[in-house]
Length: 214
Image 1 (cartoon, helix red, strand yellow):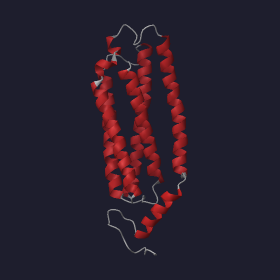
Image 2: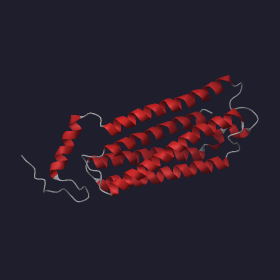
Image 3: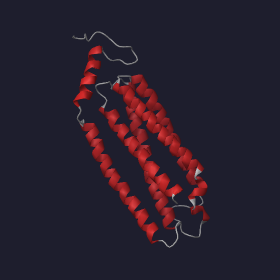
Image 4: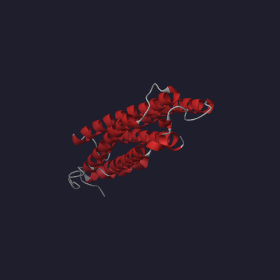
């Protein structure tokens, strides 16, 4: 049966019946698009970058007679775990909303994509604001020995990646509002979601290492 391209599905999706048939065909073909492959390679390089930072932290910790170093009770971050725990939950939730947006655009639902990504951006901004506030409440700075320098280096670089992710999500949201994505053409959305999930996983590792296993 041949579907007519003039037959439209509900307006909130913006796809013709013919395009929806192609969506299923494209997903059935499999394979990785260039934007997604490029993002995977970029994330691989970022994994090595953070692996180096984690290795430096473990090296310093293994060679220290006492960890956290003595002399500053504020180094015991378990006493400040409440806010970072809330921020962690927010970032995990942002990954969920990001994935909901992916599922929506795979169905050709642009409005669903924009709603989900708007919530994801808001959660990302709230995470950054919360992290800056948390910094202001800590009783040590970047110059307070190896603990201070490694803590702010690890969390600061991660914060920079969250900021970059928010910008990427913003670009996707803008392009989505301009109608540039559909069920057949959304590789940039998929690539951006991979980056955001990566940022989420890195923070979970940091939170576990710095605040729980501290």
